[in-house]
Amino acid sequence: MDFLDIRWDMIWNYRDLFIRGIGITLALTVIGYLGGFVLGLFVGMGKLSKKKWIYYPSKYYVDFFRGTPLLVQILLIHLALIPGIFGHSLGYFVSGVLALVLNSAAYNAEIIRAGIQSIEKGQMEAARSLGMTQNVAMRNIILPQAFRRMVPPLGNELIALLKDSSLVTVIAANDILYAGKVVAGAYARFWEPYITVAILYLCLTFIFGKIISYVEKRFSNSYVPTQRKKMFSTRR
Amino acid sequence: MIKVEGLYKSFGKLEVLKGIDYEVKEKEVICVIGPSGSGKSTFLRCINLLEDITAGNIYIDGVKVNDPKTDINGIRKDVGMVFQQFNLFPHMRVIDNITISPRKIRKMNSADAEKLAHELLKKVGLADKANSYPEQLSGGQMQRVAIARALAMQPKIMLFDEPTSALDPEMVKEVLDVMKQLAIEGMTMVVVTHEMGFAREMGDRVMFMDQGIIVEEGIPDQLFNKPKNERTKAFLSKVL
Image (cartoon, rainbow over all chains, first blue to last red; front, side, top):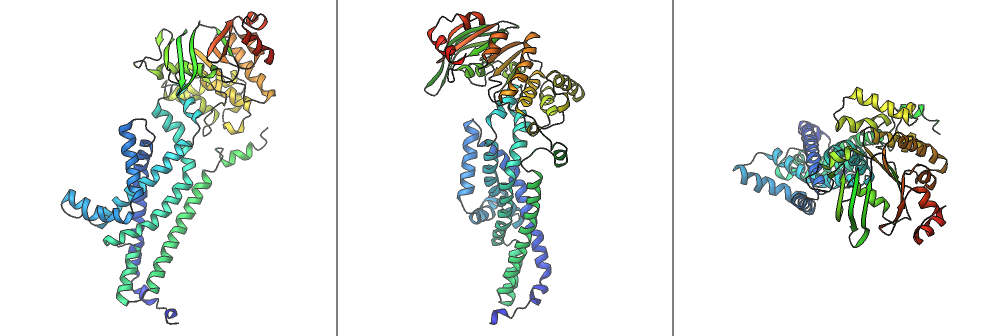
């Protein structure tokens, strides 16, 4: 049972690398997700557009980024796209964030599109019949309702992105997985570094999961704030 | 006030309206009756262009509604609509449901909009519900809020699309009473309804539609008591 002869000291020796890795992973995930959300909002609305010159680019965008592996996208962006535009690399972080933004935007776009489409047609009709323009109605009537329905799938996407951010390690990003690889390389042992990596990801997804379920609870089915609900509990 | 000329509407191959000509004068209450699928709701929805029309013209106050140059939002400000399914905004309190359009579209300030909303709520008998959410209201209350919401834009015309059809029987009256009050105050109204009592009592004219055309129209007494057309007679014999 050689593999049970665990040497945690080597993890401890590289603790700075792991801590830095956690920071990088979080930064990649959070920036990638927020950027992906904003871009996804536009692409998702684009997929609902009746104008063909908006609809088709949005559709092809989603088709491409959902239809190709993230790993390939990362390599394309880091080794081809960015050097192609700037003449040189801008570092793993820029490439990594860009890839995660573009990729998660495609998934978020689908979530956002589905959320908007799930709102009853009558809501838009009522808003329009009150003289609201399409934009005013979308911002004030449709999106606030749609966002509630999007919270659970958007949460899933956040967790998926957190884990997928480990792919950025192929372009030498100093994320959690990278720290594990360094330790593995230094000691030629694999059990300790990779179980550490796994546990760190597990902790992060656990924390994110808690945050998501808190948000989900806040945006539960009822629109009535909880305190008020008690006051009105004697509803007819 | 509303003039409809040769209105046709198709959904794909299905022809729903087959040539409607009609005119509604100011302060008139027009009730539209007919079997389901007769096109009466579609007719109503065409008036404020919730459906784009296939052929024909609609004028409101002399302005051609279906002209691409017409500002359709400008027209809709003056044409209130009440839906069968209420379509209140569930994420807003009653008061915000009513004030949002005056604030966002009429650029009314919040204080004035809220004052107006409270007046309207009083008018529909729901002064105490301003801070409730739609889900806390009964169907009849929701529909009365919907009426107040439409009135908040101070429309010249009100369209009602089967406003009581989704209500429990005991709540129909409270909504009809509000509508009667509006009619008495001189609002121009087009009401698609199955409430024959309301049509008979409040309608200046009643229109019977079937299979996409106006089969017969006239003052309620004539239409209900001396219908000329066989289809009208057959329909009335089933519903009266």
